[in-house]
Image (tube, rainbow, N blue to C red; front, side, top):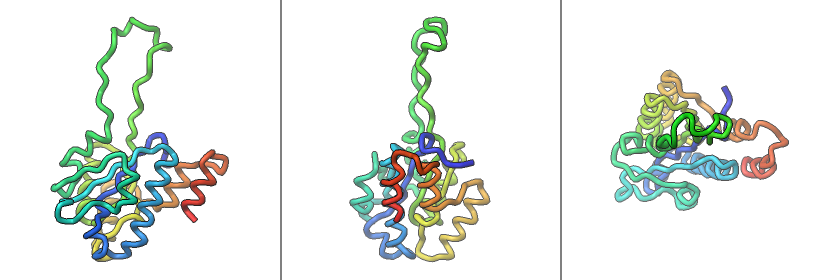
Length: 198
């Protein structure tokens, strides 16, 4: 299965000022998170951020925070425990009229659910892992962007990837996400997206 931009949402977990310097390959990881957020904005994919205990760890990098539709401050390691799932699922709309009030072809279709969750973040073996596992439990399709994830050590990061893959998450890279969202060199955003990737 390939990613569909129209069915995707991007979740960026805890790229925080006081946390990033202690993490493995943090500069490259943050650069990829920024690329993902810019690509998502370009292709009209909602972008959500989370911040773990921001009073202690600071806010997300300002450039990244500015690209998020909303940012969730949290104390639980899993953002789902703090309400992220409600952000990702549109509220159910109350039925209007009865089934016979309009012919089916004139009824407004329900807003499609964006169930493909593309996620990257820090630390991969703690907040990213717990959030992704809870999203899988809530029946979202989870796509972990490996080159936009890190931990203090490579071993912890890689253990998180192994566990997530075993739980049913798809492991992808920033470029895989970009080109799956685009699908064709004829996409109207192809040149702009390509510029972000290079």
